[in-house]
Image (cartoon, rainbow, N blue to C red; front, side, top):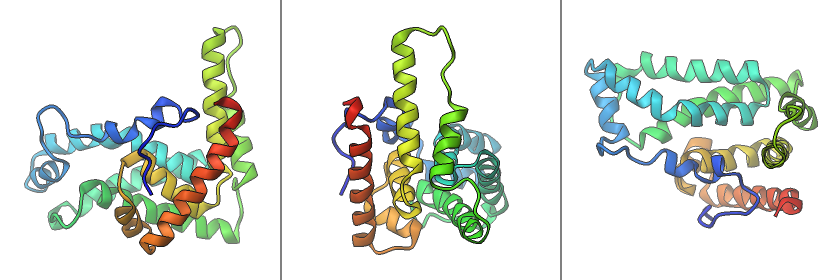
Length: 210
């Protein structure tokens, strides 16, 4: 199950996410950059950070639904990259490795929230909607676009955690089902089912915007 065709309800920022992580014009791969960083090239780290800063932050924010937690996950992920660089070897795509780190941090917080709930489900959706309130006096087309984006954000926040994580991993990285299964430590068939259910729920939620 792949997100191959564009969806009328999916804003460009998410629809185009896999292309955001495409190779840059100089054709330097993420893995080559990480190897250069391992060997002391700080400029290679800056290049990787520039490629993945926005997708990783969006993934963290949408997955945990809490700005403070998302910022901590983002920072902890890059700190882990820095601290483990000396042991880095190419065993998978860099994106798989990077988002696996972020996923583990997010999953830890999700388990903690199971014992101490905060900003989950409907509360996360409400928080996202409140934080993204439109400004008054803006052009009608921009207001509609922002309302559409808020509706999608809320719909994502309402997904069960397991469905939300596989959808965000696919949308923000362009990784395939087997790579996402590796990150979430799930069977590929389970991952495929979760992605299918997530897409169905999001399509239904965004039907008024089609």
